[in-house]
Image 1 (tube, rainbow, N blue to C red):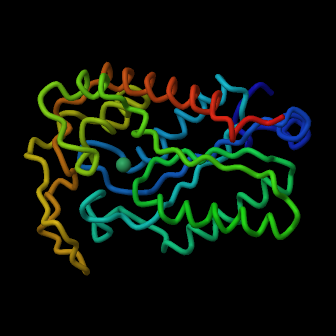
Image 2: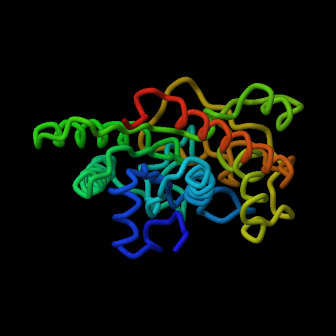
Length: 260
Ligand SMILES: [Zn+2]
């Protein structure tokens, strides 16, 4: 039983590592969301799960089962929740589900959790669920529970952006189904990508406001917010390595995260 995946361990082995050895727990947070005609609907789960497993092996941590459903896709960052295939939770459902799971790990004795987010729209609800869990744990007398919230793309540095987007970087907001996620999927799960179906299109342009219900015509027909045509597995490996290295470094050095 040398897996880092909690659900592959017997409870006694989990207890040995999580409680006796005080290993932190990493929780990938994803979504079921369309990512264009060329790719499966699970990159927001696959990518942070793979990063979490690699980081866990580097730092001696465990990885919990991923949240496979996420907060509602928004038109200007994920194409929108009107798209077929995308299936989302209400924000407060995600908030409360995450709060429950954080408190469960705390009940076992875990005191360090890193949330590995792969779906932009999760962030406000994940933040809220974390704050509520910490508050309730304090009421229960647990004062030493710490959470780090990580979105892996924040670890893609300028140097890497220049390598991966040699033309022009259009910004993370229109990267949905674009070069970043497609390259990472080509590296991690090439069988789930068909580049012959990759749409060629200009980056989506939106006004500086949002309309509800969404106006479907605002979203490019493909569901991608920029073209993934320049994605490659090599770029995916560069992106994967730099994020794993960055997150490993952050967890290894952040003073608030270290356990005495
Ligand atoms: Zn995505």
